[in-house]
Amino acid sequence: MTAPWQPLLEWWFGTLESSSEIAADKGKLWFGKRDSQDLEARTRFGDCVEQALAGGLTEWAQRPEGWLALVLLLDQLPRMIYRDTPKSFSGDLRAQAMVAQGIAADFDRQLRPIQRVFIYLVFEHCENLMVQNEAVSRYIDLVAQQPGGDRALFSDYLNYAEKHQQVIARFGRFPHRNAVLGRASTAEELAFLSGPGSRF
Picture 1 (cartoon, rainbow, N blue to C red):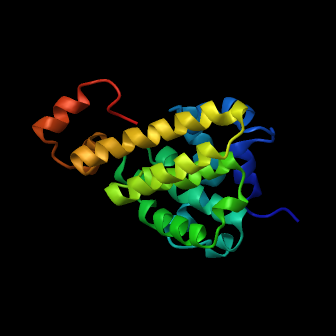
Picture 2 (cartoon, one colour):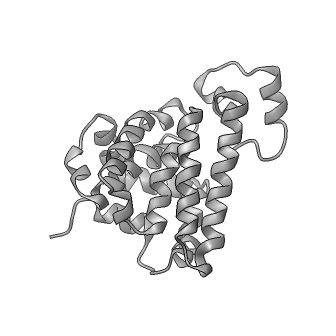
């Protein structure tokens, strides 16, 4: 019997073997901004996202792969389904709590390296410097564990984590979220947003 989370994991990660192959195949889904992808996420998994945001699907978190899928429903898919609205961040707190619990149970180390990227990305999305530091530390460890062929890929993920960390160290929040969340931007933040690389 197919696990209830399997369709989501197959959509998100595909069926290829190496981390580099998976990233090449799925990178546009993960980090692109396409209406067609957002619509597919909403059509296929919107009901599951709503259940997760409402505190449901807790039974998924009893196994590492189900835990990973639940984290995706809370952290990644809302950013697609509810893009450019406050609701896109509505699963973040629960995702952070789920990730902390799973890491305490060593679930992350039972996942494939490319899957672990999306566990630690939850910490990278947090507007808290201590949590950002944790994200960077986790990515440093992940890079060190990779064979030479995949190390450049994971070094890129570490680089992005460090950029997020630097923004939080400087502003205490992500300025690019201000407009969506109805927060007033400071003059320094506006100057930052006018430059390249200020939005993730």
